[in-house]
Length: 179
Image (cartoon, rainbow, N blue to C red; front, side, top):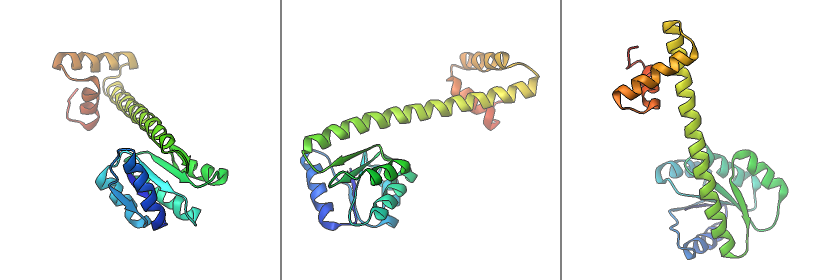
């Protein structure tokens, strides 16, 4: 887990709570400029960003972590703050929690990890679909065929070569498969 907050005292408290829940804290961070590269290098499961004295600082931390797209972000609040939550949501948080029972934190972690896995799966599905659509378009243009026939060609080649359909589509798009 990565913990980011502009207040050093809060970093220590949050890191202790997370460790108490049985998780490793890989990098407590304060500096906005450091959080993105650390997220990319360390690949934490979840990043916790605390709202300190400056909501702008917390929002910048969130933006940096989300930009790296390495893990879901959970905003930590001392008390309800609907305005901050709305701004943080625009920047990509997956959840927020307020100070309270550590078991609530663990429950939030479990939910966030499941939702992030679903998000990644859907993201991959959309990429695979886009790649297949591009490959069909290439075949349609190249051979003057309709969409259904283009898909049949991709599927037939995948079966003959015992490769995944998406791998065949990628080969068509990147030009390594002559059709």
